[in-house]
Length: 251
Image (cartoon, rainbow, N blue to C red; front, side):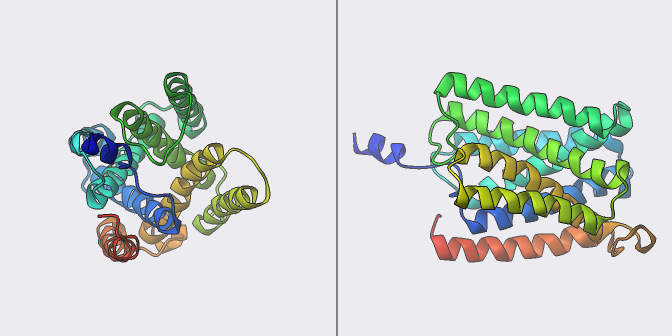
């Protein structure tokens, strides 16, 4: 009985704090640079890149869902996996299937809304913390994958279709995030609704930052390349995760 009570209080998802959002943005940056490294720098293409990152994500999700308690490294590795796969999915929709980022975004919005609707119909709730049962957790990860894919498509739409600079794209997405924060503190709008908006838009914010690091100087980037940018992001991410674990004692 005590074990059942303990399990009921265990969340398999990280607590939604400031560190959560910082790590989420860094994870999306790493997903962008890693996805581009596989598909472009290593010249694997989007289909092969998706196959490799997809296999890695399935393995991470298998261990994440089977785990009986929260493991911060495993959880955030899975988040990074969804951002990397999301990059490959978005780019494949645009460049391999030639649907463009606009229609790709429409498809991914439909996928995200469908997932959330199914989740709500089964659970009568879309609560993201705490999550301690396999059913809601699987719905959470599917929604995360759609969200990160959608965020990638939207970010690329801003820079490729609307021809905004990477700094301008980051300002647009950070502006949306700022509005969400304001609504969170100044209104009674449903917190779960605001969470998923913020979750989607932190993806293009991180993606535009990743592009800023990797793209050539004449394209408005810092020309670090995907490999160097990935290494830099991994170091910053690991340091932030270490600090967050020491602060919140989640492990």
